[in-house]
Structure formats: structure tokens, C-alpha cells
Image 1: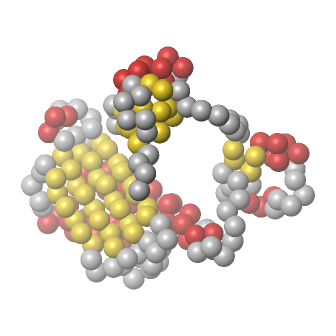
Image 2 (image 1 turned 180 degrees about the vertical axis):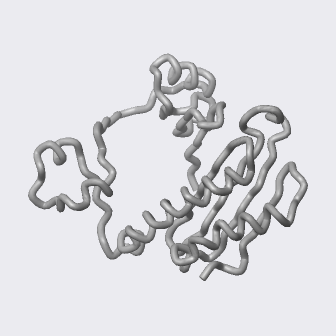
Length: 194
């Protein structure tokens, strides 16, 4: 059963009943995967600044489940095509969530394979789960974080060819991570003490 409180929000575009109904129809195809969803948010956006470019329209779908949140985002020139793609990606992610339900509920411990275990074929690891388990290829331990200003950290990350970088903010003394965003630009995560 799909939650009754599906919230559809139009941002930067005229709300149309046709898009609203099409979104609900596509999401409703996955009702068996959405049986535990507590709420669903759908954002249909038109980016005015990108008008005339292939990335005019965007759909964001947030599905709230008891132990997790599933998020899907699609960008393109046709909103109906974006809804179709987002619906397919949502189905895959919900299926993955449901397959790992015992882990999310704490009944099974989370396992991550190290590269050495993969190469050495650890006896305790079940072969059937290799394709489903994340595999850590490298592990790096650091004793301290370098202090940088925000822009300096971006420049250093770019020079090293990384997509993200941890550092200690020289101005605030907080632990931070700067990262490249898929949509362009950069993001900054700052650890604050509560």
C-alpha cells in the first residue's frame, strides 16, 4: 500500500494535473516495494537559469522508510522521461532496501569486505553475498588533519585529482569535508559539536 500522504511540489514551473497524475501513476507501480513507506515527497522543478539547455527539468523523490530514507534525482530536458527514469531507479533502490531489511532492523550485522579478504577468500564469507557487499579497496589512517581555508582545500583537492577531501578549517577549527557535486560546484560538510 502506498502512503496517502504523497506530497507533490512544483518548483519554478506551473503545476499541471497531468504531471501530478503521471508521477503518482509511475510511483504506484512499485506499491509492493513501498508497503512500509511512511511518506513520499516528489519535487518537480524547472531550472530557469538552464532554460534552453539539456538539463531544464529535474525530479527529486524522497521516500521515508522506518529505518532509512531513499532519495532519487533525475535531470533532463523532458519531465516525463525524468519521471520514468526516476521511477526505475527508485524501484532498484527500494528493492535493495527490502533485500537488506534484516540489516536495517539490526537483526544482522553489517559486513564490509576488505580487499585482502576478497583475494584470500576468507572462510567465513559466504560467496553468494559478494555482489551485494560493499568492498573497501583501500584504508588510510591519519593522525591529524591539515589546516586549510575553504578555498585552499578546494584548490588542493583539484590539484590532487580527488573528488573529496577532509581538512580542519583554519578559521573555525572544525573538521570539514569538501566535495565535488555531480551538478557542478562544490559542497562543504562541517562537523559541529552538539
